[in-house]
Length: 226
Image (cartoon, rainbow, N blue to C red; front, side):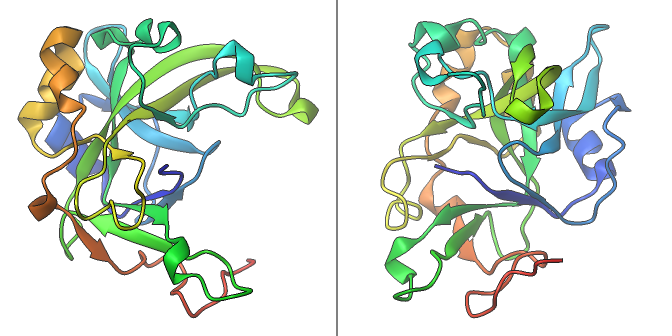
């Protein structure tokens, strides 16, 4: 399950790739780590039909049987046949999530007594811009008990079976990734029957294991507490 990714890119690159018309996120960080519950930029179609970058919280509403007095959210979506997820399959509830690398925990490299390190994946050592195929929704509820009920805009993204690069690290799943402007256009506009084939693993020759991004500690370093 992907619960950490990084964006080392620019707003201008995202807008050019996705043909976004405006930026409502105010995002300008040169390198951004995103964890569950964090706000992060996504590209969606706005109410006026124009594409926009918006800042949404990572974690879609959970199925009712998983929630109690709060809902931390679901980051990764696999079973699109579930009635819980079918309501968001249409183009008005889809978004694309920019990233340049993503992480999966790698228990095989854990040193006894140490923390589980992450393996990082990208299209190449240069970490070109790619996108997760995502969903978004407005939601009112409780994410943290101490904060009470609030209004949110939430997002999550599709996962699929892992390819031969991810499988040795994480056998269950990998994100569904879009790599071209044409795939982004299709995901944001077409009926579900025309985009469901995009829930597929990226070919193995399109993904490599890379070092952690600049904001992440190396395997032999302790994470910063600052």
